[in-house]
Length: 296
Image (cartoon, rainbow, N blue to C red):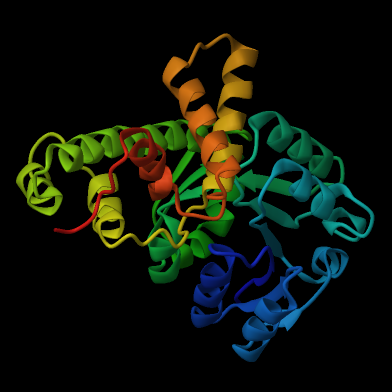
């Protein structure tokens, strides 16, 4: 018999992930502040429930929320998941939060016999929609094995990295690579645009070489179309990179490039770009060089 799943957080990523679980035949209970999105999921076959109700009625509760304090609230707060959760319930936090907060929540859950897996994802909205997200998990191997069928409905590259906190730590490393890659790409695109060459042709020329990457292929076509509709918002990535720096400072790891990128994100936020996709990093460099990257 398929597990009953609770899903809290139906944003850019959570909504399509919930829909994929419904398509796979799971009974899904949903919750989000956006009532319109909740209504969409209910119309697709889900059932509305509070976090406390999910704790009582669901075998597994997934959280996909913006920041650590949101996850703490729905798990540990008044009328949170742990209010009624029974031993054997599994909480899967697929948010990108700090490792310190993740381990703290897991330890509190364990006091009630509730297991937790931190399982942040990478791939953005397109891969959330088609169910091919990369999932990096942290927690007990036996618990991971018991919910792998759920992960397989939303992801294609699923790896248990280690104990609690390992998944979110891997996600921090992922965010460094992705966002600095976008920043480096942006510098190159702005250089090419200012030099007056055809940026689209340059992209085709370099994408098969060592400069080619998943980031290049995902972001350059959107930038050339001036499409900054968020698959991964700048303010969310700012939060992630702030978590990167806090974690790095705590364990004694200097990250000079990451620290510069945090300031670039802050500049974009002040400039009203917080809701743009992180491919919009290019706009910071465009403003410095007084040029715009677009199709000829």
